[in-house]
Length: 145
Image 1 (cartoon, rainbow, N blue to C red):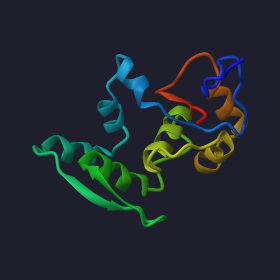
Image 2 (cartoon, rainbow, N blue to C red; image 1 turned 135 degrees about the vertical axis):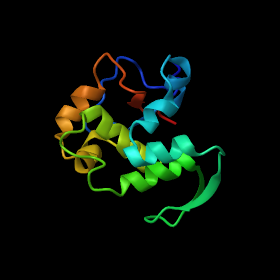
Image 3 (cartoon, rainbow, N blue to C red; image 1 turned 180 degrees about the horizontal axis):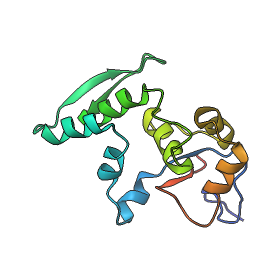
């Protein structure tokens, strides 16, 4: 029997399963990723973005790794918003909190245990939310290499 390297739909995620935002889910679905991402900005940032007419790309240096990568204006604003201690708070939904973690960390895969450290919610709740029959905002397990 040959395996394809893709996770089976029958394999249940665990507390150590890595998740990420599957951007292809957004491409297939009817929701607009840019609009949803903008909703995670502060009102002041949304106003500034709406007044901007050009799409600039800037070099951004990750303060933790020193890695340099390019971000558009929206990506840069997300990084700035993520520095605010209120970016993820107890009033933010579990799904929005998880999405914000992935926006802030460049969509690096994380397990429910790791996500729990970032959002202050139990790993078991995160796993239950992400492993149900519904896919929330494209947050899915990563595929095995």
